[in-house]
Length: 260
Ligand SMILES: Nc1ncnc2c1ncn2[C@@H]1O[C@H](COP(=O)(O)OP(=O)(O)OP(=O)(O)O)[C@@H](O)[C@H]1O
Ligand SMILES: [Mg+2]
Image (cartoon, rainbow, N blue to C red; front, side, top):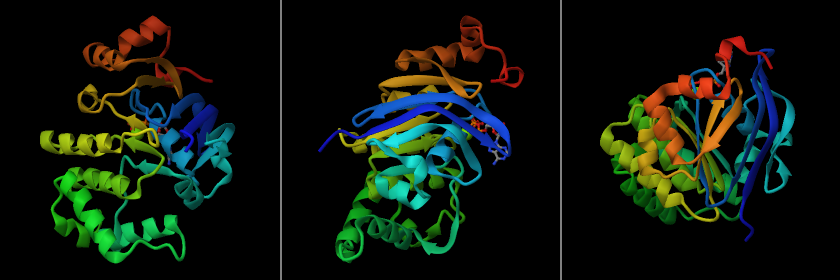
């Protein structure tokens, strides 16, 4: 099987007629984990939503392809079936649908009619993945994210990741709200996905997560585009210096004052 590849080229995205993403380029291959960092409001989640096909986020130019196929032409459902997964910064609650039913429907949607996962196999798989995340099994029968604590929601996103086994995942602030132990379990979950057949973009504010999930590359986004790329040491430096040092070095003004 060919190694999967997600390519984002010169992406421009606007929200309610305001340009937010202004020339975003990124290439992630199977086997790689990239981190995306950047100040609040710079457009990280907007990139994620646009790639996943959220109708509010308008791609005004640029391209996004998965294994050479144009994702921007696809519905959200088709993007998921093509192998894309997004763990949202603010996961939605789905009232009246249990976690188990939600996941079984999602898995079967991907497998297609006539190829549904046998119930016992599904239950075993879900038990195994919940154990990896140290999740209480009663979460299988709770409505998706309803009444979950912030950290429980994040862990549930990683449960979905492990169950759906996508080719590519974008994990938006998956570490926010996690306690020290939960951070390790979530990292275990992501690390368990590592293979040639899986690529990942982790959006985070904190270097701490990257101690547990070693990124191949760290990208810094400001003013709607990636302004510099480095290795894990770039995240360490940011943690120490904040964004100001980098802004000065690169000659970048504040997000608010720069227009594309
Ligand atoms: N649905 C929306 N309606 C109006 N404005 C939006 C919407 N989504 C994003 N924006 C605006 O776009 C800009 C970028 O937001 P985005 O959520 O992408 O930032 P971010 O880099 O993810 O920030 P954070 O680190 O705080 O999560 C912000 O100014 C935000 O207010
Ligand atoms: Mg965000």
